[in-house]
Amino acid sequence: MDGRTSPGRYLAYLLAEPDMTVKSLCLKSGLAQREVWSVLCDRKPVTPVIAEKLGRVFYSPGFWSIRQAMWQLWREGVSLPGNSDA
Image 1 (cartoon, rainbow, N blue to C red):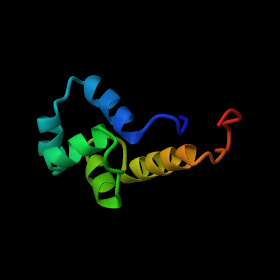
Image 2: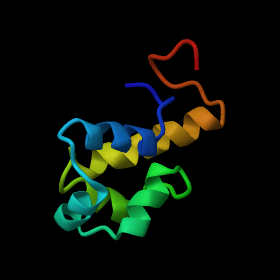
Image 3: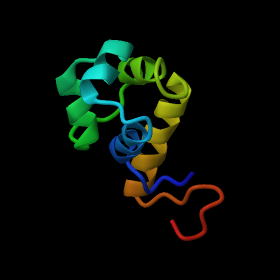
Image 4: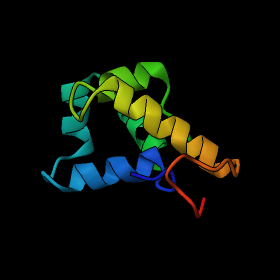
């Protein structure tokens, strides 16, 4: 997994796999629809609170926190371990 995919784009991919809607994600996670759409559109970062709620449905809270950190580092031009072309 590289840092070049935003958490929002990755979340969109995960929603498409089981054909899950934003509404059903919200019901399962406790997130508000506006929060989910803000993450999906990359207007809002995955905060620890959002990571906790996303982790109830997909992977774990730590996964989402790391995904957000990798995305931010990549956007800042920081080379990530294991990525020679960052």
